[in-house]
Length: 224
Image 1 (cartoon, rainbow, N blue to C red):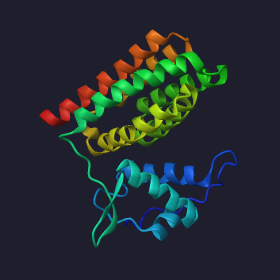
Image 2: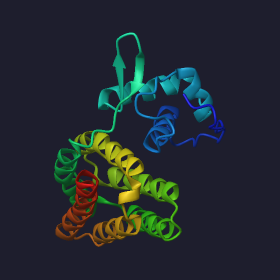
Image 3: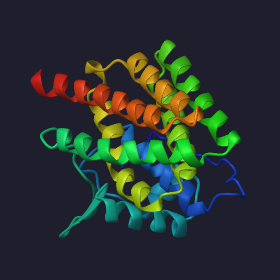
Image 4: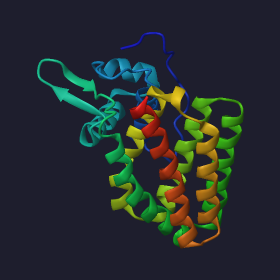
């Protein structure tokens, strides 16, 4: 477990459960490869790194085991799972179906505030991309996902897509030299604006545009 990452003692927002905050912080560390694939996971270390207690960290790890982000291995305990290049196109193919469903649901059901928040998050992604700030881009991407997933009101689809989203984030950090985050930001903005317009067909097309972009990126990595 890396020792160079400083504890984050930020106040936990009252409206979100500590376990949800722990999940986001640990997922961010894993997605950014600050905790590398194959690294043993120690609850006490994660509590220090996230600035949260061991109980929410334990709850977050249970969720991560369920989606395959971390795995239990004999004699090694819990370790971070590997980034699988070969199967990544299957991940995107499956995610495509779910993202279309989620985007269309958000286009129908999002509140006015949620529509504004989606576009605002996508615009943050574009600004981060212009600065070459991958961490800022990914944080804004995570923010967009939170709003989109809440707005669609389809917990089954969200539960199915979350592990795929995390795999895509890790893939990005592992192979970012092959990617273009400005192109990704534009694809997210197109989807967000389509959702905000309440046009379900356009929202689905926007989700397809985003998945097309991720597929092109994955193929560049595989073919390189």
